[in-house]
Length: 288
Image (cartoon, rainbow, N blue to C red; front, side, top):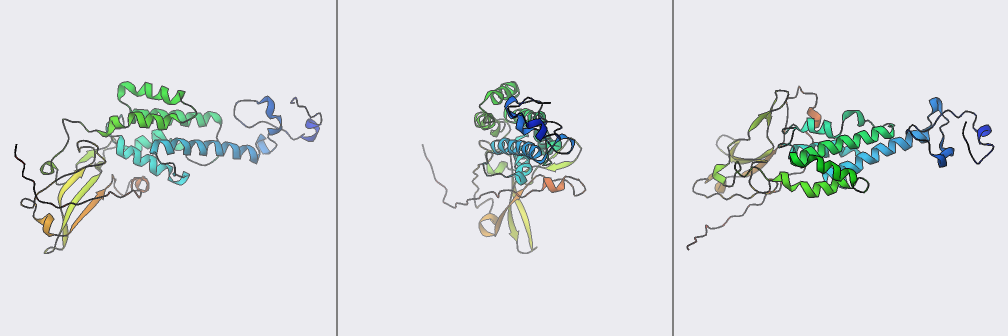
């Protein structure tokens, strides 16, 4: 039985059976009691669904730095974030494991959730996010800053603060010269034993005689010195004559697994295309 200013409340709501399951009883919210089967009515469910969905959107838009992301695109954007940035994290480049930690599968279905579940999602996202973007000795600090920020705005603030710490590859193991680029993208073994081709771009020319595209160089992501998302290379027509005489194409390669893997649909999502600018010019002679 509930105290209420309306003396007729109890008689008018004999079927009352519970509250929205959030672990709290709001003294001013006595008219929000549930009246449906099992103590949960449609209004209560809608409120809890909206709470989780909006929280997922809010967090994901900040992590992905994309305010236009809708619920249907959340998994794709988070996976691509992990694919780009998780190589030097505890996930060792396993984008799927990173996604599952950042957006646990049990919270992906659009249904009703308790407030405690919404908080558990935020905690999971915060922990995984910070383990990706922050150096190991700053992960706890990153989580604290997000937790103490106004609302959930800490995610975008942490991204702006820490993201530059992970976009720079190892200066002792990065590529600056065209001649040092490999002829194919390297493969790494994930935790399940799958050989995964690293994300990157293939520079190819068309072989007229054999009617096929041949790769000249591969530009792997995360091994290019400086900003791995923006790179510039120069080659000469003496050593790479085909690039100046043949038809060229640039093939963007994303991480993939074998078709037998159940996650193939997630691991082969559409993605923003790489932008290429070609500039031809004479070699500059410089004397000092």
